[in-house]
Length: 429
Image (cartoon, rainbow, N blue to C red; front, top):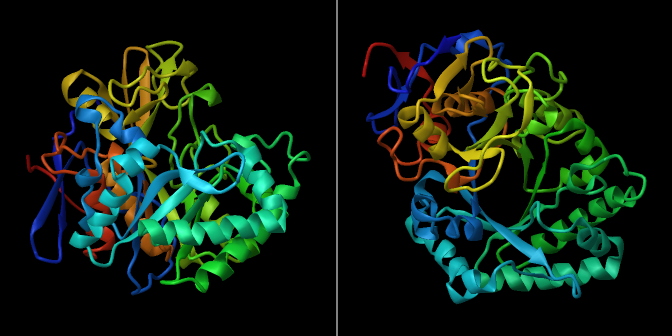
């Protein structure tokens, strides 16, 4: 391991199509060859770069954390998922989550306006999220007439506001909010959600402009097996797999939240490679699967500040970030600021190319721009459909960390859009 190094000690150079240099600073020598990579051959079909955008939440952040539709660099996304719309508890029809923001302050309109700078951009409305109650979704999908009323209204709503489709982000059928212990109570959700997906896809295929239908699904193998009719999912235009949050403070020990491959001390299938292979093994084409990439860190409070390695005991979530204001979570730009200005120690685990940082009793695992490039390379090698960034408003959109805006998204684009590979050049500062 390499410890205590600030970020600008090495340069990762990725050459773009225009033969310019996109420069991202790293902390140490990293090698793609150190990972056992699958030997799949990629397709020439363009990769998707799906940018999740937490519109209202990002707007309400204070000071430098505030993120507006105009802050999105639309040139770096092929798809934007506007999160979230919600279900009306009485009508079971979709409606804005914050009418003042989305209608009165024209957030829908301002996001759709991004198409002017990227003619091929697709913008979908995502319905659900962690704060949305699962019982509403369960009731919606339980009856055919409910489903039809929702679908008919959704087509009208999406076309009215200029969206290109709908993303289903119910967390989760059967396993409400990730709890599978009472799966027998909600077991009918799996079959009903399958009916809903098929009916939605059939209707959207026949709609004006052929609206897209996607889903954002769990990367947890147990949840995936219990929640989804995989045959129905295969009908979707693409599927965002949440290949992160494998580890957080509830595990009571430190670990990386979004590993590509297994890490010691945790279930062998709690990693992106295993999750994606599960979906493929159930008949979903690899090119329909989009790898989830977090622009946030999972943070922990250590039991003993002197025990700060992987597997160290933790007593709870990490402290709130000054902008994101959520325990156990820090935006990438908050992590960067801590490493560069607040004395946090940076560690790269050379065995699995994972990054973490710590200071006193605070500890966080996160994805570095090199992690982004490595995962983009993995997408090509596994012949996946692309990468979904969760979410664009927690990347370093001011460019304070490396001198370029959206360094994580830039690294992804360099690999998937410009067709470059990772190249390490030591000694440049």
